[in-house]
Length: 220
Image (cartoon, rainbow, N blue to C red; front, top):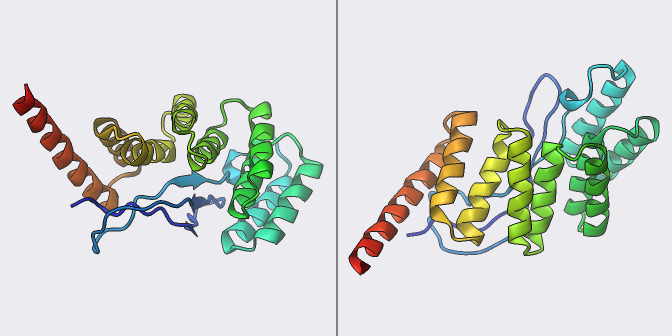
C-alpha cells in the first residue's frame, strides 16, 4: 500500500545558535496508511547564520528578531520587520527569501516570485532562494522547472539537505521517477542523520523499485 500523498502546511522551527526556519507547505492527495506521516515539500527560510560576517550587530539583531516573529506565525509583523530590515540592509538575499515564504503562505504568488527574483539577482546561487523558487514552480505544476531549481540548489550547496528532500518528493509524487527519488532521500538521510519517517519512505520506495524491476524482467 502506498504511503499518504497529502502535503500539508505547517511551521517547524529549528532551534540553532541563530534561528533557522523550516516551512512545510503545499497540497496534494493520494493513498492512506494511518501510521505514516505524509510526504511534505520542505522550504527553508534563511537564518541569521547566512548573513555575511561583516554585517553590523544591529543588522543581525533585526534579522534574528524578524525570524523569531516569523517562526511564531505572526506573518504580518514578520513581513513588516523584513521590509524594514531591507530598507537599511537591501543587499541580503536571505531577507527576500523569507519575504517570499511569507507571501507564498498568504497566497500572494506574484509577490513571492518578485521576492525570489530579488534574492537571486543578488546571489544567483543562493540555495534557499533556489529551493523556494522550486517550490513555487512545483505549486504551479511546472515540475521540470522545479527540478531544475532544486538541482541548482544542491549544485551550489551540495550539503543543502532540504533540496535533496524536495527532489525526493518531486521525483516520487510528481515525476514518477522512483529510483531517482530513492537516491535523493538517501542523500538527505546521509546529510541529516537518521530521520525515522524518511527511513520508512526509503523502505517503501526500495520495495516498489524492486517490484518494478521484477516486472520489467518478466516482461522481457
